[in-house]
Amino acid sequence: MSETSGAVGIIGGTGLTTLSGLEISGKRTLETPWGAPSSELTEGRLDGQPVIFLSRHGNPHRIPPHEVNYRANIKALYDAGVRTVIGVNAVGGIHPDMGPACVVVPDQIIDYTWGRAATFFEGELEKVTHIDFTWPYDQEARHILVQAAADQKVAFAGFGVYGATQGPRLETAAEIRRMERDGCDLVGMTGMPEAALAAELGMRYVCLGLVVNRAAGKSDHIITMEEIELAIEQGMSGVRRILEVSMAGLGALTDLPQPS
Ligand code: HPA
Image 1 (cartoon, protein in one colour):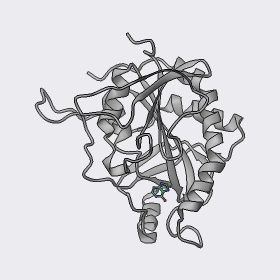
Image 2: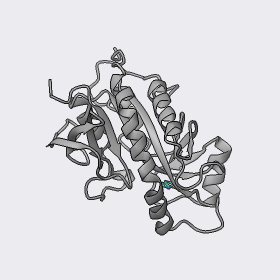
Image 3: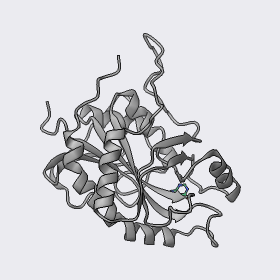
Image 4: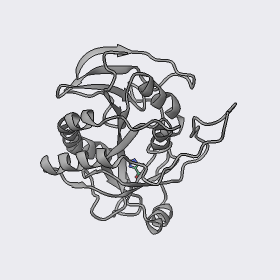
């Protein structure tokens, strides 16, 4: 067993390529049957809790959402002993209450992505497997993050439907209107298939979203990189604080029974 077995996994997205505050004890390069993960695994402790950090878009940030090897990322964390994963995602806000720098802990997903390697269950299989995905995010982990967000007094929403789009382009205003009609509250490009792959391996998975812009057509201007960078600057310290104060609770969650 590795020293960090039982560690909480954090997958950092745009704006979280490295995790300041992490007392780093080592770095590991892992290969998986699905290829190499986006970055080396950084092992260490956050608020005393063993953590393994992985940068979803690589370090430096260079892998676009549709080219992330989600299978390698999730399998590498699994092989390193991680059973609880927090996916940190920059998102666009569709719901009027989800403006820039708001932190969102979504409870549901609608998947609009296509052409991504989205399952471990393919190839030479002994049997066909359909995992239950009714509640895509782990409810206990969600409650811990929501409580932490409330305690940190950051602007947050403890619910929301995450609409996962293909990218790398942002959406049209009509696409966002359709997503709103579908019930989406926020939009991002990296939430899927990450969540489903974690579920396939029986891991707890939770999303911590940071709204970095109002979604297309939801403000009086087009979306600019400047506003996104500003929202990251304003909101990422809240995300880091939430991560820090959630660690003990997340680390104490016991493993889920493994899928048969
Ligand atoms: N759309 C999709 N993904 C995003 C957005 C958006 O508006 N903002 C940040 N990630």
